[in-house]
Image (cartoon, rainbow, N blue to C red; front, side, top):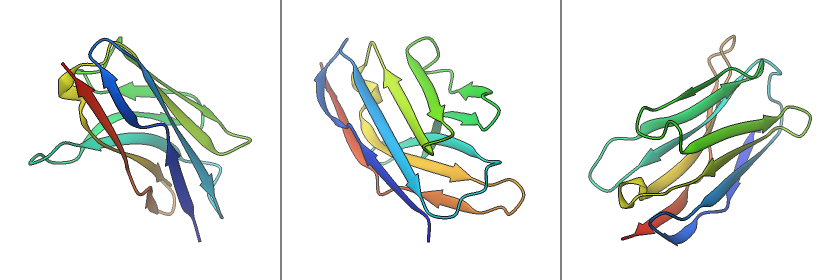
Length: 117
């Protein structure tokens, strides 16, 4: 049973910073992509950033230059450092692990990020 546990969400003023963390436990392939998605009220879930087990990263255009994703393969954790936050970053953020060889897709329970103007 794979579990993803997120932490670090909260309320911050525009221009501020938050750091999200996600710890994965259970049987996970060493070849995977770990990432963050977000879903704002009334909108579809969208990719924020992901990083594969080799360290390659991909970011949504809306967060490039402001957010940084990192991972610790030994600990099966993935972090998202969010700087220069904007009100439009307000959403529930979900941790995700995808295994390309098994097509397994795991989700965390979500953590709320609210950015006030």
